[in-house]
Length: 308
Ligand code: ATP
Image (cartoon, rainbow, N blue to C red; front, side, top):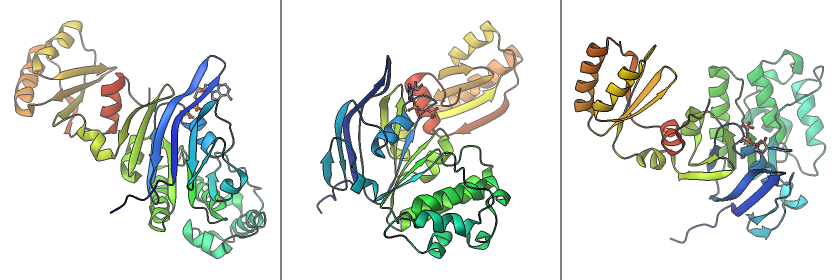
């Protein structure tokens, strides 16, 4: 079967601000009706990449293909088929939810009916509520609704759940999943590894303006092999205790109090770790044993954690 051409494709995208290489040769392609996530720590270049693709910023160089057309800069006609979740909604607090959506819909020649948008962001029961009385999660879903009024094919979500509580975050995830089911293509940035794992078909991990790994969450985790991760908290880890961990037959990383061991032989490593714990009188606080995740991929590639 012939592979469908990607909805968006970029090659060797670059953007510098003075001496800062914010985007330093980024290439990827985004298939239609998928969630494509750019994951990376603060300052990795995620927002700059998105702003170029949204047509807000011009790249210094690189090729962009959107909706099947190769351009140097995203055109107004292309922007008409995109939706952008604004970081700060900043909506008038004394407007009602329905009024906000109707106002934004009035900017477009063709817009979705307000009721349809309300349903897509699960705010039907808040249609008459004042913006000022919405919770943080509801405000964010309203902001997403505003991004959807023109029924876009491509939706950009820059850190859509930052600052939301876990329940509100999950509600947002459900809305994003539903958008994908409707055939929309979603480009998401996040520094929450769990979010990238829960939502993404493809993940592109960025650091210092570069793509350091790409693939499905499963493929990326599998890139660490069959290893198992053992983690625990070690308060006041002495240099000799730290050194002793080296004999556990695992790759060791200590980051503050958190010790991470990556082992190809779980049983052998556990046996040695228990001996180490007794010998150094170090309790294995909050110990967990799990398969590698995207955070481990980032740690293994950079020696750093996503959120430092
Ligand atoms: P965050 O998660 O903090 O939003 P990010 O991955 O989105 O980070 P960017 O906002 O794209 O990263 O920033 C990439 C780099 O470019 C950073 O070093 C940032 O300080 C710098 N930068 C971004 N915008 C500008 C600007 N307008 N002028 C100068 N430097 C900028």
